[in-house]
Image (cartoon, rainbow, N blue to C red; front, side):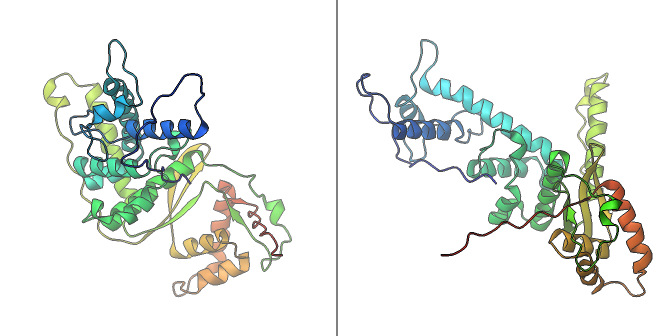
Amino acid sequence: MPRAAKQPSPTARAKPRKSEARGQTFDELRELQRLTFAAVRYPLSPARRLQKTWIDGRPMRDVLSEFIKPNDRLTSADRVEIYSKSYWFRVLDCLYDDYPGLLAILGENKFHRLRVAYLNRYPSQSFTLRNLGARLSQFLIEEPHLTSPHRQMALDMARFEWAQVEAFDGPALPALTLDDLLGANPAKLRLGLQPYITLLELAYPLDDFVSAVKKQNNALRSEASNAVDEERTSRRARKIKLPKAQKVYLTVHRHDNDLYYKRLSPEEFRLLSALRDGATLQGAIDRASIDARENFDWASKLQQWFKTWMELGWFCKPAKPSKKPRQK
């Protein structure tokens, strides 16, 4: 997981330039990189321009001129602003594309404030923007006021939409086959779940809500591309009604390179969760049956479930626990 970027000191200044004969030290280079990155990712003003003041209240132009040279066309601030806009517009657009459900819950203004606050605390630190939302769920727990009054719904949605990112291009391991299971002792057999699969217990039916959001978004894109007059293209989308509370169990996965999410019964969810957590097959069945519904037909359900799960390639060999170094 990416770590929060180390913040430069509010009063940090670039070291005075010394004689060109002396090379720059590693520590000086690292400090310069931190200052430059901090300047580039410093939140833009509401007018989408550089802020007028630095972290400690000093004029932004004065701070930037200490370590960024101007040229014959642009000031130090102008040069940084080009990169700052490029950075912010790109990362904001990524979260806009990856979290349409969260956007629909919060609305444009609250979602924008949330994106800026999140990226200010957890900026991109990966070579791929795919990982940009990896800590969004954690951030929503840390700052619940940003999603009030729909805190739980927003948190569930962030988890759900991040699970889709994981399912889309997460790693896959060789799937187990029926031959791998023949003759195995259920009391000793352990089955791992593919690493791209996420099991979710949600407080709202967000799968239906996201489907409605995506359907509307696709319809608006189609309407805009085929519009013949200004009235049609300027029409606003009707707000989709937020779902009512309802416990839902989901698995988010992929099959044949397509993304899917599938509802599970409580018994399926408990069984798969136990297998994921390292229980034996018999132990997982026992755990799932504790709160099973009355007269639940375990024999037929297990046969049906495992047939589907094996066809989808959900099972792999469980990951080996990491060995802890021996204490001397």
